[in-house]
Image 1 (cartoon, rainbow, N blue to C red):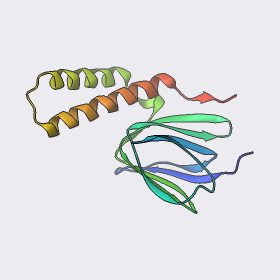
Image 2 (cartoon, rainbow, N blue to C red):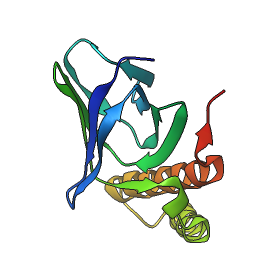
Image 3 (cartoon, rainbow, N blue to C red):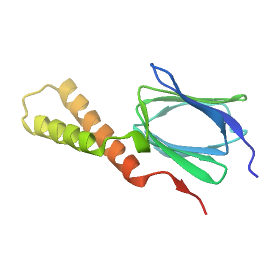
Length: 140
């Protein structure tokens, strides 16, 4: 059995997840990163992504927004702006949000800040859709 470590996902509204896990995989602005017990302490930004939580031979998936992962000797805290389990995601709503943002982006009636917000909205929608379609699975 793999060594466990404490992992929490914290949003502005609540502690979304808190448990002992074997491994956590998420995306940083520079690529994918996996964490195991006894990882070197650090503070690292995460990108909008699907976080994979491995425990007891199972993988749970959640869509998370931007934030950071604080890795300490006592565990890992992910402080993010949003978090949603794969089975909670309304795929049709995500697809509609993506379509609206893409239409607004095509209109060219926005400044640079609005363009960045629209691109982030599209990225969030794409991540939510991929997370929902991947579903939780048992690892073999």
